[in-house]
Image: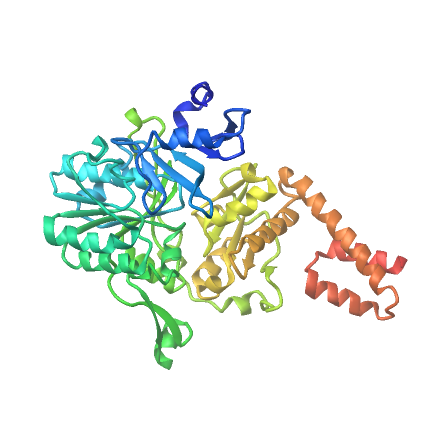
Length: 510
């Protein structure tokens, strides 16, 4: 197995090795999984592997002393180990350089991202940076020994920072308070805040004037706002009833959501990938914008491939809603002639290729509002068109606007901006994978004439529509009222006029 891994061309980028009883061992690389041996894993293999690592704690994690590698066990109902996930841990010096300005100013940072994007790697480098470069007293509360590694002596990757181990996951909030009361730190570093008690402890520490650096699982800050266990990290959320005059002045409903109190962190960082960060310098302003249905301001910071030693450089991009777009207009229902409640996905305006120039003539450029890129990418990946779809933060460059209905209805400015640029608006009621996939299918169908790469997918959709129409025609051929059938198609299927003509011909045939 070791020989198979070392001979792989992506050996230096190995993510983890998976060993499951009775199955072939797998090595996971950025490009995909690689089978290490044709021989299935046996109990002897698992016992030999576990004998080389430390003891497994209550969380079924172990490590190798003075390294950052993590070995996680899968057990059967009797408690015996029947599978191992061996994650490769790396200390990458300079991985947090793009956040140096925030760290230097003493800002409390909350890093958000899905598993595997490098949250722990970044906060480890932040701890080293604060301790070594700025001479601060840094205490790491290391719940599962991922930041400082296994064993009593921490890994050199944390520099001069000190590390407190947590005996049990349920005790992390107590160790946080203990670290403040007993060791007089200037900075507390926490990995994976996941419970309400831990969020409360972090809030208490923030009020004592200590700089916080922490991570939490999620894709965007909006995920934390809507998470009952972690909303306290960003100030909490409460429902407020406004008076008639105030609601009229704001142009909103009388019952609105507002931030309950101050945020435990001053800045938020959404980790999009290992090469891209989305920084919110004012986390409270971002939360307020999200709750008000506005587009928050943020900065995009990327790795510069040409920089020396892999140092990260940043380029700031501001959210597209500038002052010039702050024009009050009618509600979206009045603009687009109504949004039927029975429809889960509609096109608010007809597709037009004259609206946005896009970043590339060979790609469909999409501006998202109220929907995360990660969620849309799942639908794009299912349709195998990820290489031909681009996202933009500038609405004037977009070919189409894809928005969450509840968010779009509350923001007349984004509607005005799209209308002024002649950009078609597609609305989805929810951000579920199913609905977003339907949205992308609608885009493929409507924009196939303008983009060659969409033609094949559009033909498939047209074929499916024809099959559906033939079935409908067969079901309704005994109905003398043809207009009823056509109206049903118009309100339920939202088919284009050309497809309706084809359906009418098929019904006449039957």
